Length: 213
Image (cartoon, rainbow, N blue to C red):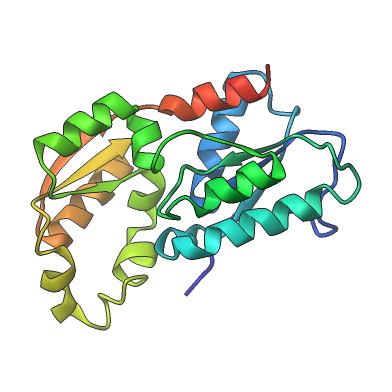
């Protein structure tokens, strides 16, 4: 399975004088977009952990800690921001952030900070059996979801894994008809009703702007 992630330069961290943002590989384009919109494109160094860890959240805390420790080898007080919500780590990521003085984006997961907590909670309350996609997940649905969850090899597992879902909501960060079509195809593949909700970059933009202030 291909690894979908942003990568550091060949020599590792190149700008220890700059604040660092450790992101999920699924947020590379979005993070760069909000940095550019805020006039902060050159103000931060960015490093990413594999997007496939979306399926393996237990790996995230140790991955963030390793990146942070490496990044502070040359500057112990380097400001480090974490572009992850809790993301299924059950508070383990917060323990790492507190111990190492890292600041992470608030919220339980990326769906919440893209949609905004109030809006996401309303969607969840409206229908608990909702599966969510972002731009990145729509683009890489086959790799991360269909193949990543083994549904390509075991299609009989579809009902077991998704039988409790009724709809798929595409939380769109951009107005991209191609991504909307991919999200619709994903819903069809899963046998779910489809709905698109435009969110923009939501609270990710607020987090990046606050980090640069």
